[in-house]
Amino acid sequence: MKKVAVLMAVLALFAAAAFAAPKHWVVGFSQIGSESEWRTANTISVQNSFLEDTSFTLIYSDAQQKPENQIKALRSFIARKVDCIVFTALVETGYGPVLEEAKRAGIPVIMIDRDVQASDRHLRLTIMGSDFVKEGEKAGTWLADYLKKKGLDDGKKQINIVELQGTTGSAPAIDRKTGFATVMKTHPNWVLTRSQTGNFTSSEGKQVMEAFLKADKNIQVLYAHNDQMALGAIQAIKEAGLKPGKDIIIVGVDAVKGAFEAMVAGEMNCSVECSPLLGPQAVQAVRDLRDGKKLPARIWTIEGIFDETNAAAALPTRQY
Ligand code: GYE
Image 1 (cartoon, rainbow, N blue to C red):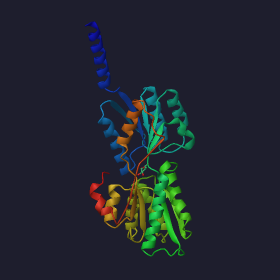
Image 2: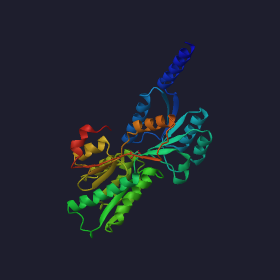
Image 3: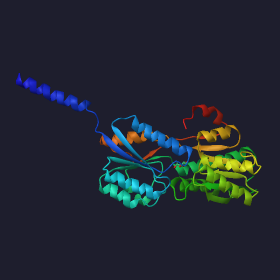
Image 4: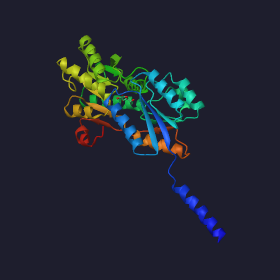
């Protein structure tokens, strides 16, 4: 009898362990700010995904575009002994020492969206998000196809391109420039006549485009590192009495709703998709980590490209 009772008690313990609630984890999330529609969608995606799982508490910190605020936030997460840090790096450099501190404290760091510089990557566990170099290449390849299709590029006549860069020193600004430049090299008649940062915002995109237009009447293409700056530039182009999407071909990145609306209105020509909806992936990675699973070193997001041929059909199903 005694043996049976002991056996039952052991079985009950096993059952309890099997159905035990997962360990509660506190996760610190250092976000860079709210410079674009993309960023807003990204923040909401991460916050909502963690909210849906009650075994997590997310501490959210908005750095308002200042790396020093991010360093402070990371230090406060370390001081609070959070279980894990989710981190988007505003720019690539400057986070080495604080990441060392997290490592020393035994707190794993999962990057989402923007990575740190290569020499600091051993200090974080993984990175999930988009291939920004590929996005730049896609923008260039789309432009080459479009110019050819419209009979606008004979390979000899100079095509003047202006570029609105993202935040200086950030991974997407560096990589989107690099990717586009690779395609430019194969088109010797394409010339980058002007290139300046618009900090990924609509207002700066507009301002810089205004300055470009004042100084230069001969612009055929605008390549913007995100749609938000392209949307600002569209305003500037209109105010200068030109037709965006016609007098100047406009290529952006992100595929946010505003870009779809502009494409459907014929005022923008292409947007390379970059999904901000990283929340579900981020929660899954933290969950796997808590369960003791090994995370892959890189988790890529799969993305498409949109232009006048498919924007109208896709618009109703867009989530951001
Ligand atoms: O393209 C831009 C945002 O880091 C990929 O940041 C992200 C970029 C995105 O402000 O709109």
